[in-house]
Image (cartoon, rainbow, N blue to C red):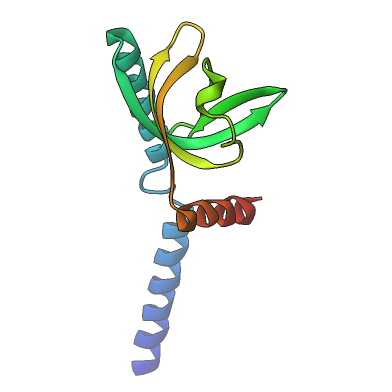
Amino acid sequence: MKRLLTLLFAFVMSASLSMLAQEPAANPGGADKKTAKAEKKEAKAAEKGKAMSLTGWVKDQDGKTMFINDKDKQAWNIENMDAVKGHEGHHVKVKAKLNEADHSMNVEKLTMMRKAKQTAEEKQKEEKK
């Protein structure tokens, strides 16, 4: 009798684990919701003409200096290049006025993220590759 109960228990546990493995993740659209929220916030700030604080990377893409936002991974053209000169490849926080029409930004203030934050972000990107 003990043997039968043990086998029954093992069968029930393995069946429940296999069914659990087949279910989709609890929150598959979590990243999509964050992206949509970030885009909505950016659009609202651009509409009102307000400056917005964003964190991201200053990158050189196709001969243009771009700002890649951390939250929604969108690339923004930088109108005033002199404000970010020398910060290509750095993780920065910017306060900028956004222009949704041509997807550009006018940087008012730029601050570098601390060095530990820079290397941690680079390591995460390398691990994902």
